[in-house]
Every structure is written in C-alpha cells, then in structure tokens.
Image 1 (cartoon, rainbow, N blue to C red):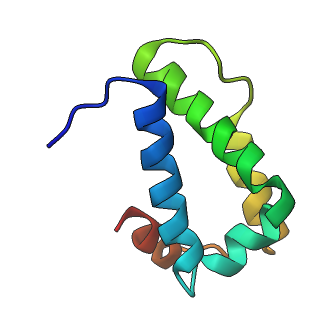
Image 2: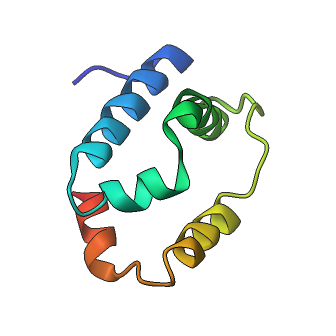
Length: 90
C-alpha cells in the first residue's frame, strides 16, 4: 500500500471516494442535494483542506464539519439513517 505523502495524494483519495459516493444510488441524492455540480470542485478542495490539516497539520481547513453534517441531515428532513452511514463507511 502506498503511503500518503502530500496534499495531492489526499486530493486523489478524496476525489476517488466522493466519486464512488456520487455513483451510489442511495447516497447520490443526499450529496447532490447538498453540493451542486458547479460547487463540486470547491467542495473537494475544502475536504482536501480538512484532511491535509488533520494528516499534515497544515491548518488550511476553516470550517465546522460537525455543523455541516447536521445541516445536510436537516436539508434531508432528518432522514439520514444508520443505513446511509454504513454505506458511506463501506
């Protein structure tokens, strides 16, 4: 397995993961409701900032991920369930 050595490595992982999320018929409606197509690249960079900060201490991330996820659930009428989370983790 290759080790994560750079922000670029993180960005590749983030984009691959979220590509799979967008391809999943159960998760796609949740993600596309929250992130419009024209904002997708911005969101991928923001998530990369989060992981870059967590892995390398870059301090590039600004935001509140817990609050963001609560807002996603709210936009989906609080219908995100453990089933959704299990799919996400897989």
